[in-house]
Image (cartoon, rainbow, N blue to C red; front, side, top):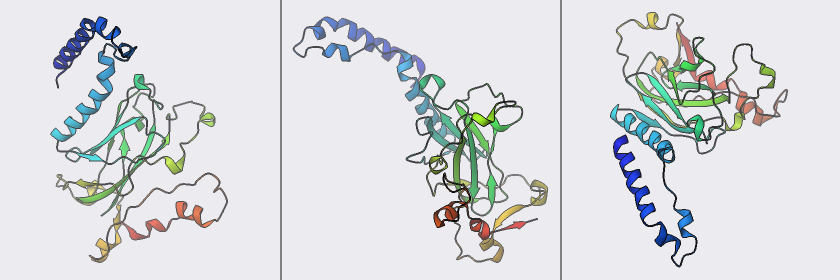
Length: 257
């Protein structure tokens, strides 16, 4: 729907309420008229923003990444979009006027599959304005080969640490509920269009799946989740704590120069 069409529908609806207000106030249902109020553009902007984002995603041959059913920023995140032609991940957040809790969150994202890659976020750049509230957070990736990759995105901070800020008063988001993507979420990454050699694109090398190095086609890719230390796990060796922080998850990858 175009904005002129939406404004027209709102105008017609509000005129209808005004024309029938006397009938509604005198009917046998008591105060039913109090539940019908005129509608303004602010009432439809959140839904319109989400609809435009999804329509735009479909038009650009993109993928919608499944969102976790429960996480600390569940009230702020609208959707997560993958734009394969741009090598981008976009997180759409509610506007600050729509009850958003975290104005400048910090995200951490990783792709795992044929190789490993960390997402680089625009708002993490030293050139980013720390006082600007963005409704779309853009992350970019670079991988040496195409294929299906698992993706995990977590929230580390509700509001990013800025230059000269007092970080001693800032707390991390609950690590047990910080993952905003569903476990097992994946995306299709297109073939690398650049014709430059791998050692020029990745001068320091990259982490590659051992099954591909060994030519073992029966060794399937598994998702490599972020390590974290749950509350209460500091300086403990309990099996549960070891599960979340173990380095064994990296054993299926070798570093290739």
